Image (cartoon, rainbow, N blue to C red; front, side):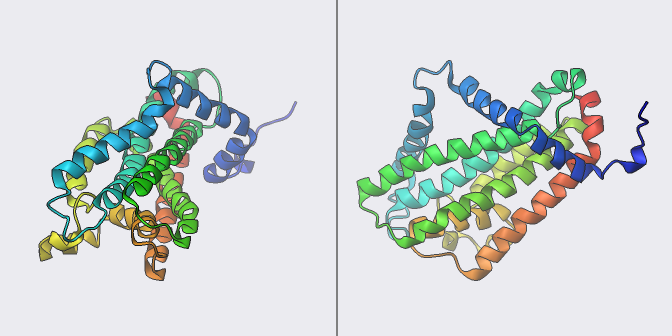
Length: 270
């Protein structure tokens, strides 16, 4: 009979990664199921992912476009490129927390890597984001905004966004299991941050005090890493790229360590 020696088991952070790789087929299956279940009762189905950002852009452009017309040409492109990033990060992290709680019953019955739900939620969010980019292209063609070779940087931007979102989802999911108020607090924070982040307006309109706050706003860095090649038609500068990559990797590392160290306790607390 083989004896289990816990001292020989790899660290939780490594073990969870190995198990995720072993269960990769399950991750792909769950990602597809999330996408199907999310839209199976919708009349518009996946088409809603195109229509929703278009409707948001039309309404907000009518409401604010005239106000910022002098400082922001092609306001709809500026607005939508920021909205897509914001919606991707906030909706994916909220959904990850929800799917983690929803999967608690299954985690108690059978073994699957605890991070499976988070990876599947982020994978679903990336698919939604890619489909939503089509609505951005429609707007760009409609208002005759120029394209440039800087668009080739967009896959890098999306990868950075996905890494950051995965890390943040891990942190929030771990916190929400142990502190149930995390979900409510997070919703309040993102509502406040939405208006404190230059998504609908240019940073130049902010007071000096609020402008200093922008330097500590991680969402602005992530929005600009995507918005710059789309709206400004040039590559982000080196400092922005370094800051965005550093932010994404630090968040991922912190989230992965926090989540995997508590992974064995998650099933019993859900």
